[in-house]
Image (tube, rainbow, N blue to C red; front, side, top):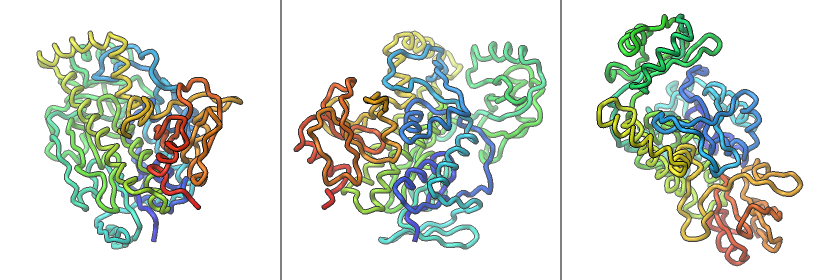
Length: 476
């Protein structure tokens, strides 16, 4: 029997597999497609996702093939400068096309021992007290202790286990694709600038390797949203919206997306869990979807590994839903607000004008950017220090070390300025680092493997009370 089957080989599933393998969990990824799609719906990673890469020693790989960006307008396309004093040592995003991202994450997962099986369509899921049985389209049956559906917005896993997916259907639709553009780039840029004065759901990017990314509002919502648009669909809509089709030709890929917002009622049903788009779908405004998914995986990975290995305290796996469901709900809400701001009716235009003025205030800009980039997330761990429940930013330690460089193995960590504290009994799960780090205004912090502060203080007895909550019983 396998430990965990992950259904879906996108960024969420691949990162989850890598996180599980850090803890020697036997994991197999099942991907329906026989090869990479080449589609690049996701275009980059926000600051919190960048932090996660650094926490696992992966950031240099991404920076080698990507560019950093500090761009305003993350909320509803409203043009603003990047805010000052954002609470992170990585105040930037990383522009990485999704195919490149998937290649890097797959390389990492395979390096750690993940088995990836392509061309495997899941058609049946059943579970009992001992495990989960998965049936594939070719009749093969597989058995694992746990199953995680990372198989997208039309998740077969979610449907097969009967999890409700309430929300609102799409009311508007947008065509998206990559293709050659015959028109002169300067003329294209001029037309785009003029159209975007009133229609922000439109754009033609500068060519990269001769190919442009084209975004244009559709005429309505397609009856069959699984069918990709045609090149003629793009030409017709470009002419209707921009007065020209720019001579688009030779598409690499074409797709469509809507403004539907839905969220799974439960992220866990017994031994089956959901992550990424299988758990939530929303408009791509703010570029949050892919980031939300990989952050689900980062939260879930160590908890599921602890459960498989037998040291997880009671309720640890359930805390995945308790922590991530509210985060997903908040993202759905802010994308609903952004879609309203992107409207072209008089009410939306007036609201946009007001919000543009508000975004001119540095505190508002920092708040909104922190929300979109997910650096402001705080899980509810109860009363305590202001850091409790927040992720810890990277800090410099003595000897030229940095905090995140000590977290590559996905273990807990006690950062101790006093030298008087101890994690004896938990050293197989928690590292103890004594360092007189000056930027902390607290004697010590206990970090979960995902970097969130589980405890802060200087009292050994209080620390001993908190360790079992996140790291189980002490080893004897």
